[in-house]
Image (tube, rainbow, N blue to C red; front, side, top):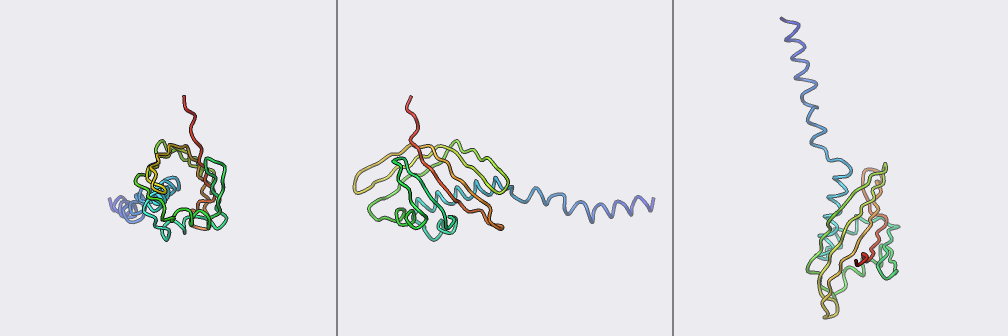
Length: 149
């Protein structure tokens, strides 16, 4: 009987405290999904100080018209006062993990005003995130107009 109590005590002291540890930690895929949401919300509200640190120094984005911007160019583009973003949403998001790289694809919808003109974009996107040290950074983004059927 004493042996059983000893092993039960060991179990409660060693195994139980760590059994929930994995459940409490987010997977890399969940972390990237959270970062996508944070980036989208910060872009909508022009909170450059929030989303700039999420972009790698070598970040590059390609838009539907083929134009590309570096991190600095994209940040400047994102804070232009001639536009107002009213809606930004990503749907149908899929995250494909490849070690320390995450490829995110999905549908993107943005609505607002630019230079007084209303716009309503519906695109497909691909974002590439890399884990550098302990931090996930977006290294590339690409937007494409979906095929109209």
